[in-house]
Image (cartoon, rainbow, N blue to C red):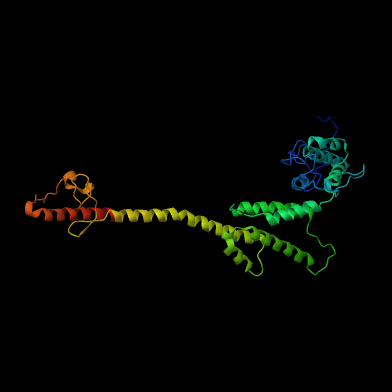
Length: 321
């Protein structure tokens, strides 16, 4: 509690868009990557991209790439820089294998550790670029889903972009060379994607290549994915069609010819053995109608005909319902 005649000194507020701003959740124990940088550095490029993306989301990438330099001791930003540098250094240390954490522990700045890692693991990136380009050429869909195949390609493209980024024009020229370079890279991705598609997508491949100008990779993927969806819908309908055909065949097999050459609609009734009705409509099971007259010896065929007509009428009404 402030004494009488004194004023509390308010802490200076930091704009949330400033790289010196730390959210209450930005504590030193945060883990940014699933797999830490290994001692051998064989996952360096993938690790580097993931860690940088995390720093960009926190607006702290400048502490590792050198764009946010340490201010003078007298600067109003000095204490804020010290605090942020310590937090980012802790994040970087957490992202390293235990064998690599020693150097980070004794470093004064995050930039110092970052440069050391670059010098150690980025010497001669040509072999890795070759591996990635070869992986793109050899990558095939192999009956996987279009989304799965496309995801694998995007992963390789992303790492390759990190190693060999598209040049950025800074001279202010108006020739449009930078834009043309970007279009060329997009076209390369479309060709990579089409080359690895299964032969079942030959028509789709021809369709995409016939579009002028060539669509970007996002549009090419959408066309292939739509074709895959239509194939899936068509395949799901096939069993229904086959089942309907089988049912029709079974119904036809139940249509028998009687001795007089007239076609009956029912197999022999299991109850009475006659072929002019089913058991469901057998008079001996459900009872005789009120106007029924027991036939004599000479009227049996007429009675059978009446039984048939009654059964057919009931069967037709049931089918129509």
